[in-house]
Length: 139
Image 1 (cartoon, rainbow, N blue to C red):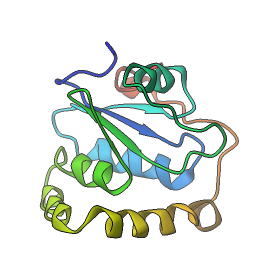
Image 2 (image 1 turned 180 degrees about the vertical axis):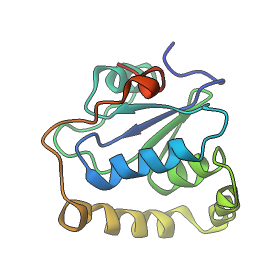
Image 3 (image 1 turned 120 degrees about the vertical axis):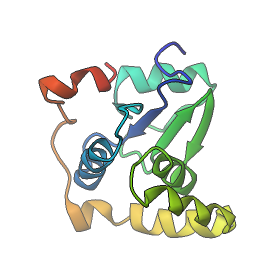
Image 4 (image 1 turned 135 degrees about the vertical axis):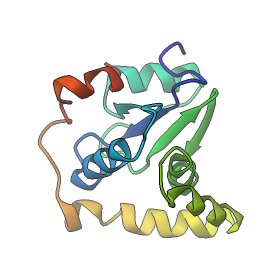
């Protein structure tokens, strides 16, 4: 799993989800040390990373966000809250919500994830990074 390292945790996101793409932009703008790397769940890079951890995401419309940090995989609410740790400002304070039982956090996450295409739409293709951000996206 050479694409994800302790130095560069990797966020795997739904590349055709508009809210997911906006979230990636939001995270990039608040990641002052450019530590996080990104890959669409539909990409070969994501497939290789997940296979290296003995995991797969069902094909079709992925319904989760994944953070791979130090060879550990976090999904759904745990991924979102741990991503916040890497952001500047007050965002790391969201980690306090990790004390809420995961089943409850993930139920809220799944409720919103099930409606995200209806609320925010869907793209026909995965996000293509700009030239200056290309090094932060795995292929």
